[in-house]
Length: 188
Image 1 (tube, rainbow, N blue to C red):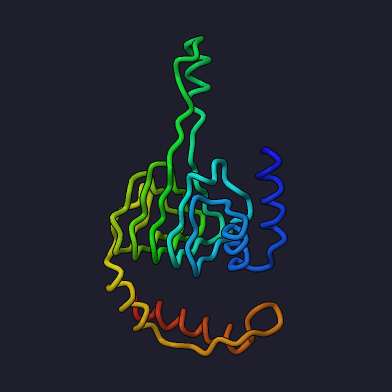
Image 2 (tube, rainbow, N blue to C red):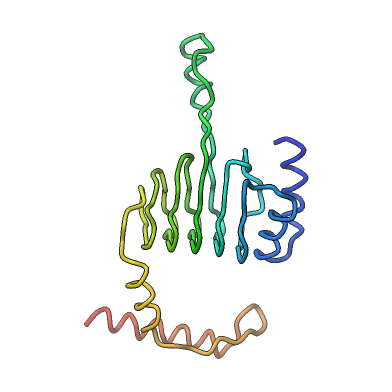
């Protein structure tokens, strides 16, 4: 890792919230572009960050990897005893209103279109047109964003309050009750 990435990775680690980390990326012009109202849980600056662009309202969960390159060329050159193969590098373009779930991987030369949710643990190895929920390995269409939003609106609401250890005891109890109720509904 070069000093630029080390310095900014330390800077990202010193940011106390994910919203502050996104502001740090923007302030220091680390990515090719980053829009307003973004959140990034990652702290380590990816290799070739100028090949990554985030639109407006982009939310990146923990453990998301952005791979703008591969090193296959080194293996191939060694195998062939040549320098015929070049490092493969490519851009990643995340458009407006995108959420990328925990532990997803976004490969190079991919666009994630607007109004998209990428489910946790997904591999995005091809461009996603947008306006939907995508998940899996490789990521594929699950449902429209409107369908997802309707399902979320129909979930029973609970009052969320904070307490010692993050959530209050009342909120924890309400979450477990809702979980149990939803399991009962799914079994009927």
